[in-house]
Length: 238
Picture (cartoon, rainbow, N blue to C red):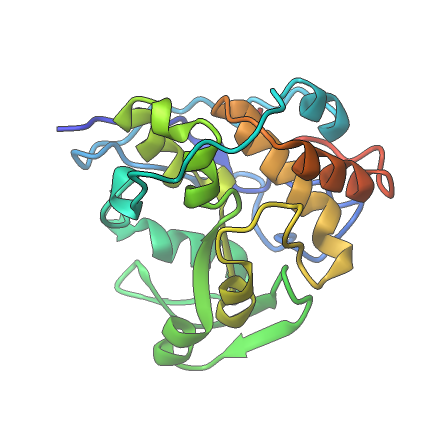
């Protein structure tokens, strides 16, 4: 049994300077809890933020080419969303984004709500759970395939599991936008919502730093171009 000990990460871990509407409805005391693979709850470690600039964290990342994709599958990271305190992590991420607008039944299932979708910048409203199921996907900000080719294939299985289920690396996003991203890195795909790009690449940098992944030269250059427009953007959760 793979046991992944993942710290509790504060849900409100964004820099509001570049996109104030994202997540602002979430209470500062509301935290996401990631389960261990046996259903237990990890220790409360906080968000660990030290106020580091994303550009400084980027400079700490190793730069080299992609490793082969050989052997990749999603199951190398996880099979299903873990249950956290009786609720699916997917539902917890959706509830995080919807904030007070979330309509929840049975203590877990989000059946309606609205929020400012980060990748497109649209304000989306859902009145039925079927709409949410079709319209929203949980995106790995650092795509798992990209991670596999930039260090994850050399990790222990429990570390890969931790990265795949870490709320730092998860966003509830528009399904069609996520379909366009696929497994792209910053050199091949950025959100159409330009107001969110600084936060987006800062979060990618943060995830890669936290899990000791590398970046390609093209990826680093693309991230630097984005961050040149927001040099004070902070890394998150590292």
